[in-house]
Amino acid sequence: MKRLLRWLVPADFRGQVAAILILGLILSQVLAGVLYVMTLPQWQRVLRPDLAVTKVAMVVRLLESVPNSQRESFAALWNERQFQVHYDPAVSVLPPLRSESDSALRDQLLVALQRPAAASQVSVQTAPHTPELGSDATLISVLLQGGGAVRIATPIGLAVRVGLLEELATVAFLIFATVSMWFWLTWTVNDPLERFARAAERVGVDVHSPPLPVHGPLQLRRAIGAFNEMQVRLQRLLTDRTLMLGAISHDLGTPLTRLRLRVETDRAGDKAKMLADIEAMQIMLSSALSFVRGVDDAEPREVVHLDSLLQTVCDVVCDLGGDVTYGAPTRSNYYCKPQAMLRALTNVVANAAKYGEHTWVTLQRIANAGFVIEIQDDGPGIPDSEKSKVFEPFYRTDQARESDRQGMGLGLSIARSIILAHGGVIELRNREPRGLTVHIFLPAA
Picture 1 (cartoon, rainbow, N blue to C red):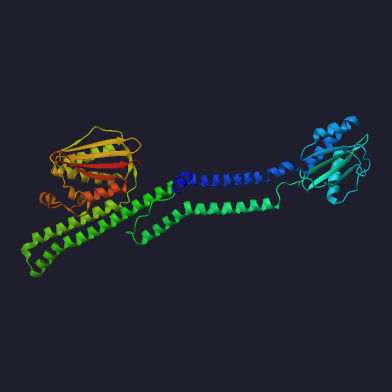
Picture 2: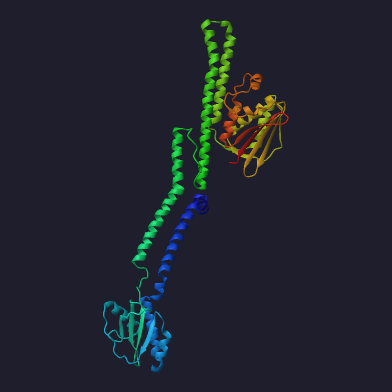
């Protein structure tokens, strides 16, 4: 059943709406076909009054155009099971009418035959019951010019084919089809939208709520996927902020305690050490502010030449003493926050130049997808167990603590936050026999 529904229901929203409309048309046509087939035998047997008048008039004109001796044989040519024609040469007077309905049919025949309305040349009455005609047939008698009369027995139905029963069935089906399509539309489209709205409200209260299952039309599935990714980024942002606050509280505790002891003991000779503690706190707070700016920067986006941006980064790192080689230039117009992207790439390249003797930077354009930036170094690399941890705020590997005591462990955290804010991905991969490759993917805007 699910496979059949997946086959019948298109993936995207427009396709589902079109499928609902098409299905409604198909169902209405099926109903019309069923009603037609159910009543078709009766329609084939029963003539409408206007058709019956036309056919009777044709028979009368034909018989009046031939000699009396040939009228019986010509009448036999029109004789059918549901349209019985008989010529009687001895009839000269017709029976009177019995009902107003017979009078209406008689008047139509007089008009079709172009005879005076007062003339008693047409008679309409109920035909005797026969197996061929049943009990609802009509007997029409017409006096012919030249003598004799023709008697025609045939069933005559309503002028409008669709009766009350068919009309009620049509109305009932339309109501049923409309309600069914409404429930289907609610189930296939409105229900996923309702779940999406509830999930958005829930995330506003609890950002750690479970992700929303991906169901519904194609456009809605894309929106749910983006919503789940946004929720993951919010969780990561809150986690990073919590870690940052915890690390600041922890790391500020030690220099503040030393300052308090020196002030309370009035050790004026430790002035240089007190200034060093104050400088360390300033560095820590500046790094924390840089991390916050990397996430919440309100810088407007604009189109930049990514190749020139990378060249600038490499030149800056080289001026600071690093050995960086940049690959061949490539055409690379990219829509981003220039200063934020410059800060992120500088942090990554400077980090590679710090731990390796030489650094290689390359830029590759992927058609209709974006750009890939790779920063490679020949340093010691990072163990697999710590590759995810180095992106956490204030986290530093043992080797980083030994080689740089002034660092705060926020460089890669800032870079990751900026790259994620641009919809990109940053990954760390070890090189053989030694070294590290930072793989950055920036999607096309």
